[in-house]
Length: 154
Image (cartoon, rainbow, N blue to C red):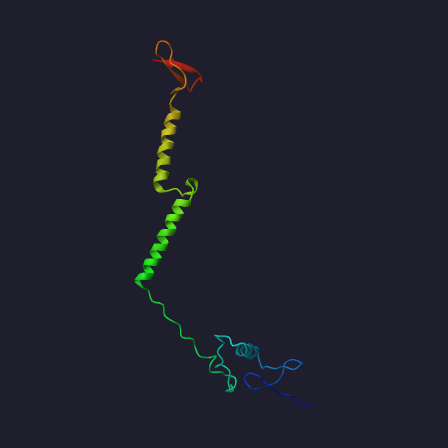
């Protein structure tokens, strides 16, 4: 029984088929490259690694590298970027509600100072009551934290 060789449709080399049915390409890479070639993919896979490539497989229009424009930084571009950033920050500051603004270092320091003041107040025993009237002799009402009673002092 004689072994039949096929010719790869992409690289035009002879190969022995691995499958029973008709095989068009010698390898997966030839099959993929043929797909790129037919569909005119802008950046096809390199075909230089395959030996004996026919000239009909290489279309010079497909394999020319694209010339890219090199973007340069300009003063106008920097100015536009700065203006856009400033506009965004201003809009963010104006549109963010007060309760969603992140805490700053000074906010945290103020909070610790207020906590110290509150602990000093809690440690005090007597607190002046502002919404009770004075006694007839001028004594002011105080709340006694120890007993929970209202006491009048002069």
